Image (tube, rainbow, N blue to C red; front, side, top):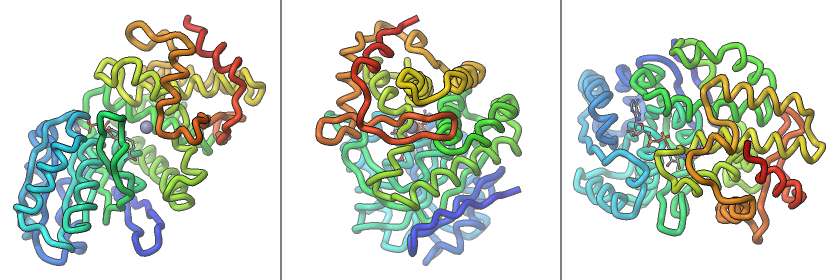
Length: 367
Ligand code: NAD
Ligand code: ZN
């Protein structure tokens, strides 16, 4: 059965629906949002082959006219050239203000489509139908949209909220295991930030989630979306608490950069190692009990996620080099790194004062 999470943002509030077969029933959820019975769908070619026919069938049944475009899969699609191509295509379809643009796919499609929707005709409505676990628990929630440039990831974009999010657990059935686990790292993140009870639950239910139990997956996605929605509602533009969502990300970003942002080491894997490092650093600084860091690492390991610097493929730069890479993250303010550390599982906090020697010592440890 289908669960609902509210994202409370005043007049831009919207619902996230979570459960099975939402794509197959999308027409019924989307119809009430439409001013006229037509939508445009943006997807990638992988997702088009797997899930577009079910969406189109559902729209047909609801009497909704649809056009669709399939973008090339992969991070490279979040670029100016594809943004231009997509924006012009949207205009060619005759999309008007008040029409709905649907992003059907992972975070790449959601980020690109949301940004295009924010600028085409100075803003058309959009809906997210996230099809990866990562996009269901993270990128489709909170309204950050954008593209990459040669200067870095996600440096051009807009805050632009969708009208609705349909997180269809059935879509996850076709997702490769490695992509599923990358998204799972972000699920674990919510437990570590501020919900120890959720982390306890994940420890018990990990196998159900990984093996595809729909009720367990629905619960994990709902808890994650609730957690992110609450943080975003408190701080939509990341002036303070929203930074908690970057737990593990400053380390992770450096590791992704060190591996060339390639498929050898994906974002969620960087986040997994990064979260383990954030807990280690918290222990080194005398802030967090050692057994909590052990529990975090054990859980990530049991999930099949990397959790040590030694798990990162290839030759890594030394501590100094890694710290330099961390400094290239866009979360740097006045040249100072922001760290998300923890007093324990579920007790993350933001700090800009981290002892440089402790950080170096942590990053020098490689076994
Ligand atoms: P993705 O969109 O590239 O999807 C990963 C791969 O899975 C792609 O090859 C895709 O074609 C394929 N795929 C998608 N759904 C599938 C399905 N159901 N079955 C089989 N294959 C499927 O990557 P992602 O991990 O979903 O998202 C990563 C992106 O999200 C990054 O660009 C990142 O910057 C962004 N992101 C944004 C936010 C935000 O707040 N906006 C937050 C986190 C991440
Ligand atoms: Zn992330």
